[in-house]
Length: 267
Image 1: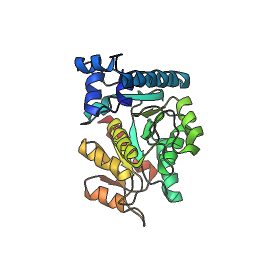
Image 2: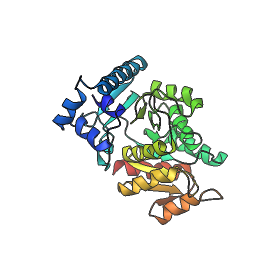
Image 3: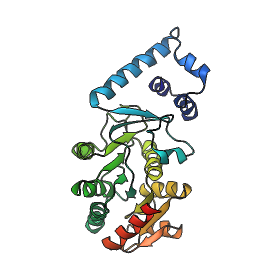
Image 4: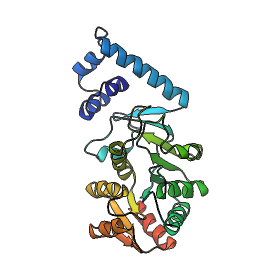
């Protein structure tokens, strides 16, 4: 029923009511077989459910205990998530620019590899990919929230990385219908999910207008612990701004970063 309602374009508030088992009138309306466009929506939902099953994907709703606890803290939690792999991953969110310096990318990789805990990021090019690969190198689960539907891979060149994440005990998760393509708006909304899921958020490197700054702002609004590497050159104005907004500054030393993040997980 949720897939049917989502295809109809019902607002997130109504979807959450459905997911929580409320709004009886809406449930009855969606189930009405006399309305042609509702029959069409249900055909789509059946096809989407078959597609998820054929991919080995699952769906978890807001009303289920398996729903990620951190997402419940959001003002607008998704009514449902579709995912492949294991979504019960608890760890640190690490984000940054899609065009990092070699030093920043290597640092993100090494922090994830030596953290000893799972990581959460967004499957994007650059820092996100380095974080996921660092975790995988240490055989640690890593979770990727994506801005497309679970049947899409964005960016396309990360199809292999996505499969590695799932095979290593992590997951790829989405709040969208399976076939939905990524957009700027959906990627920004994705950022609130990775901020909410992690126990804390670390910014590796970003300019002031970079997408990673959305994640930092969401983490701040959720009163999550926030860390940012001290800026060391151009293209890191976002780090400077994050520190000005209360993020804890960290020197670019892997041992120190790992120690601080482990402490954040213990609190």
